[in-house]
Amino acid sequence: MISLEQVRALEARVEKAVDLIASLKNENAQLRTHLSAADKRVAELEAKVQLFQQDQLRIEEGIVQALKKLDFFEDAVQAAGEHLQTAAAPSHEAEPAVAPEPAAAAVSDAAEPEIDMFAETEPAAAASEAVADGFSAVDADIFDEEAGDTASADTSQLF
Image (cartoon, rainbow, N blue to C red; front, side, top):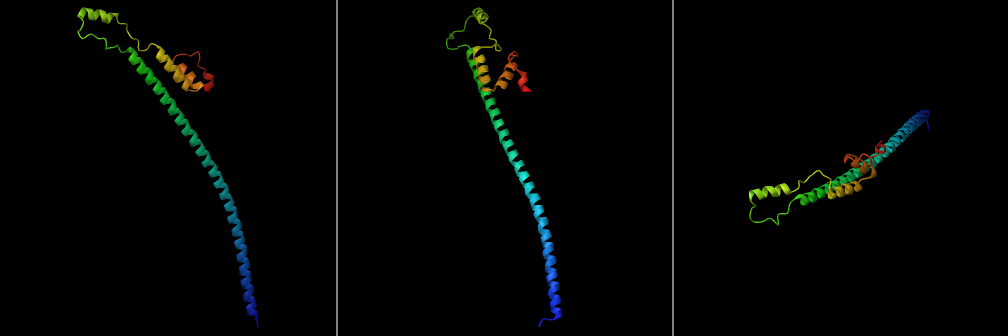
C-alpha cells in the first residue's frame, strides 16, 4: 500500500515539475521575443545588403559607361591627331634626288605656308562633333563650353 511518505514525495516531485514547466514556459517566451527581434534585425540587414548590392551595380555600370566614353573620346582624339599629322606631313615621294641650291632652298622654304596646329580644321571639327555625339546632352553642352562655345552651354541642367 501507499504510505503517506510516498504521497508527500510524489507531491513534492509534481510541484517541482510544475515549477520547472512554468520557468521553461517563461524562458521559452523570452527566447521567442529575442528570436522575433533578431529576425527583424536580420530582415533589416538583408534589405541594407540588397541596397548596397544595387548601389554597387549602379556604380559599376557608371564606371563602365565612363570608361567607354573615355575610350571613345581617346579614339576620336587619336584619330583626329593622326589625320592632322598625315595632312600636315609633306609628301617625300616627289622629292628630287639632288639637293637644291641653297638660294633655291631658302625660296622654297619661304613659299611653303606655315601650318597652324591649333587652327580648327575639318577633321578636327568632325572629331569634336563625333565625340560630342557620343555624350549625353549635358555632357555635350559641357564639351562645347570647354571648347569655347559658351552660347550653347546650359549650366542650369547641372544643378
